[in-house]
Image (cartoon, rainbow, N blue to C red; front, side):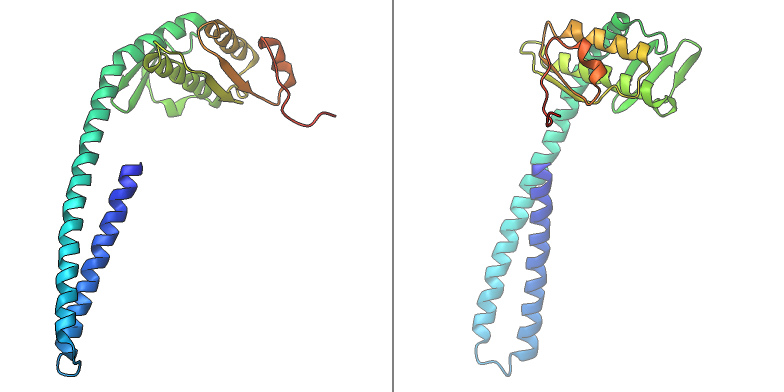
Length: 206
């Protein structure tokens, strides 16, 4: 995102310099007989032309760097896909969730397979099912990229739309995973305290 912003800024500067050069050219043509210093305008035009050439070089370098980063990012993610899918299946088995039979990733597309259907789009799922699936994907991705140095896992009211049964299964999974990495769950639901090994009250006390 930072490189993309720099590229956009550079393109805007490039366009502004071109606009200024055209304005100076027009001024030189219209006022050359009335202004006493046309040589100064010629010098300014040459200076702007040099700036434009440098901006063009910088723009091409940033475009190449941006394209290279996109390609390497796509390759990295593609190499992670098999491991992510494997982790998802392992998690599905741990929570014994019959609603989702299989999850596959094809590039940026997510394919879900249900027992009664071959394939369904994620948009057809209920809010609770979508939230649980999102949690599984986050955990699978986190395990894939931080397997050698487990990072803390943070959630903020991530399971509020789950029914009690799936909520219990999800927290059971989190309890199991907490032996491998620290898990922080932020909630206003006091009934969830029982799932935690320790709690911290952040709001004002009554």
